[in-house]
Structure formats: C-alpha cells, structure tokens
Image (cartoon, rainbow, N blue to C red; front, side, top):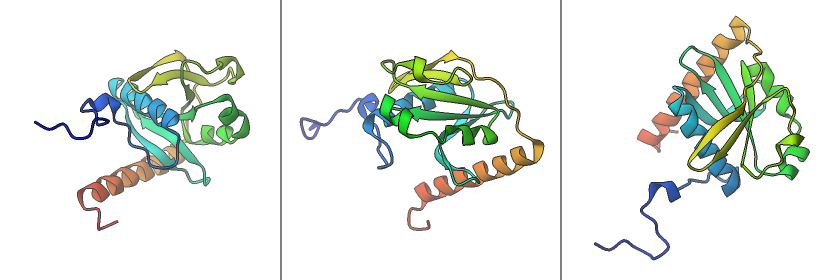
Length: 162
C-alpha cells in the first residue's frame, strides 16, 4: 500500500489542524488541553466568541454545568502583549492559563489556574479560584455555546450551508 509522500505521517498524533488564528505551538497546546478536558468529562469549543467581543481560546462545560475558560499562551511575548485575559473571568466559573512545559510560569498571575499542555495531553498544575457566574449570564452563555456547537457541526455535515 502506498503511504503517499515521504513527509506524510499516518500517526494521528502528528496531525494538528491549524485554522490560521494560532501558531503551531498554540495549536498543540489547544489539542492537549482539549484531550485533557474530554478525559475529565468536559465538552469544549475553541475560538469561542463572547458577548464582550472577546474570543476565548478554549471554553469548556463540565458534567455539572461548570464553565471553564483557558487562555493559551505560547510564549512570554504572547503573555506580555495580550492583557485582555481579565475580561474572560466575567464568562466563566474558573479561569486558567494553558502553556507549554518550557513557559516560565512565575510570570503568570497566582490568582488563575495553570495547565501545562503539549499535543498529547495536559495536566492541571494549579487549580483556579471559583468565580461563579450569575444565573442569567450562565443561561445566556449555555445557549450561545449550544448554538455555536450546533452551527459548527452543521458546517461539517454540510459545508455549503454556512
């Protein structure tokens, strides 16, 4: 059987789909983070638009309805130039930074959760403090999440419709 070009790998762990919004390094962190969340019983969406015109790198809903947002930081420069992360706390119960193992984590705020990730998986290194969403915001966020997930699935099933 012909395996195609020499640079082609049949190992699914080598495949990371880039959508043009993030670096390959950030995409690897995103994938490992998503795998960890699934293992914990969460469902997640990447690049999720919030009502405050911010876009969460990863938003996840847990088995009990808890909402997590993880902001991926692929480098020190990425963290230092992007200070919009406090705006995400208004839309989640728990906020985390997700970074690669070589990131100097001492630069990250202590009052946030910390996840170390690579393309294979992730581990929570520091739990995030809880900031419970108000009931009305939770309901609106859940509806927005469900509609975004359904729209993405519909786009996969019928790409010409979106």
